[in-house]
Image 1 (spheres, rainbow, N blue to C red):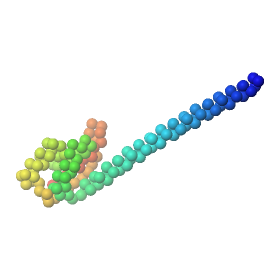
Image 2 (image 1 turned 90 degrees about the vertical axis):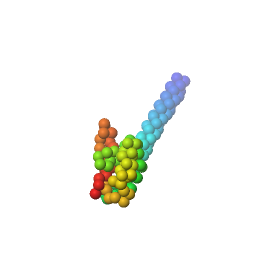
Image 3 (image 1 turned 180 degrees about the vertical axis):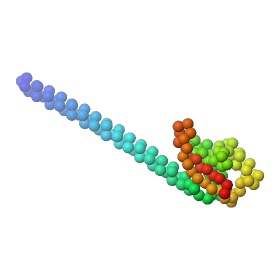
Amino acid sequence: MDTSINKALMIGVSIFVTLVIVTGVIVVVNQIKNVYAEVYNVNTNISTRFDEFSKYQESNRTGLDLINAANKYYNDSLVIVEYKEQAVNTEEGLDYLNNEVENSRITYDMKVYSSVETVDIDGVEKTKIIFIDK
């Protein structure tokens, strides 16, 4: 009878150990799946963000494009829109642009040249859109 109890106990312990191992594997696989899903989302966001700025990369734009970019990225912490070495996508920058428009130094149809670069400010990578007079 001791042999039957030992065999039953061994089978029970084996089933328990198998369940623990299978559960552990399932948890690990689920965690890996979640990590890959997040990496995919971040990768998609990054590529979309880069495509968003491609129209400003080394291209001829207008004064209206400058004003629209400043308004679009107003207070965006990861984007700097710069005109004449001044950030214009801030409250002060928009005031500066409005003053330039009111004094006819910027017109909607004026020609400007734009370029895009990535800058590191205090350990944070930011996209800088630079507009210069043509």
